[in-house]
Image (tube, rainbow, N blue to C red):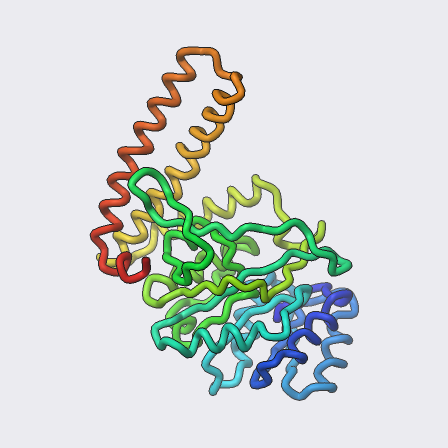
Amino acid sequence: MPCYNAGIFLKQSVNSIINQSFIHWELIIVDDGSEDSSLIIANALSTMDRRIKVVEKNNGGVSSARNFGYKFINQSSKYIIFTDADDILELNMLSELYNTMIQDNLIGCVYCNFLSIDIENKLLMKTEMPRYLPGIIGLKKIDLDVKKTHFISIFLWTQMFEALTLIRKEAYEQTEGWDEKLGNIGEGVDLFCKISLNWKVIFINKELYNYRRYNNQVTNVNNEIFLNQSKKIIYKWENQNSDSKNKKIIEAGMFAYKFNNKYERKIKSLMHNLKYHKIKSIVEIFKICCLMLINIFGYFYYYRVYNNLKDYKKNV
């Protein structure tokens, strides 16, 4: 649990772990150079429950804190979860994730749905967790009851948050851990994409996690920051070496991401304007037709690439 100036929420977050129906856990709180009372509160909590360990480091960001904390886990541990210091787990979250994980040794990650809350624990507007797969024309949204999540959904930034995802230790250790160069947004996309290439990723459509949203939190970002982080991840994945099987999957993911951002959004905007009679120019209508043709032929190619992959068929 990375912790930076989260003293106001820390006790409540830790108590939600202490009160879990699943009791066989170990919690490592990493104080990431906090300047508030976080360290004092963390140490006090550790004296109340010997399953809690507190370690300190200079401030380096959430990925740095996760990598540092991982060094202190019990070597006999088989599963890990990188929860946050300001959120709240439902009482049965760990047991639900664990019971799903142990059903199949090929599962690398299990994650759940969530609710959003404010600083006073009041529910905020429901957040959808869209997941996608390639269709004949464009991307098709997967029903929430479908458990398997493919690489493409993660690469398109489905809301598979780090703090609500149980990871098999064996799968995690096949990666390089959290990429500290990426910064604090999108690091989970990078890690979970790596895992999904070799392991199953399973979604539980149960709201087992309360994700806190407030103005000065790290993940509260504007579109410009989000796009910059997306570009970092795209650049990294475009320039990494992969075996032939995974290379095809990654290339198809790149293709979908770029088409989704470059063409589909333009089409939706133009169609919206056409619906409300904001487009009167023949040139603009011609643009819509051209974009739709590009979208159709582009995704037809994309669908064929994906449909020929054995891993794709296994994960649908």
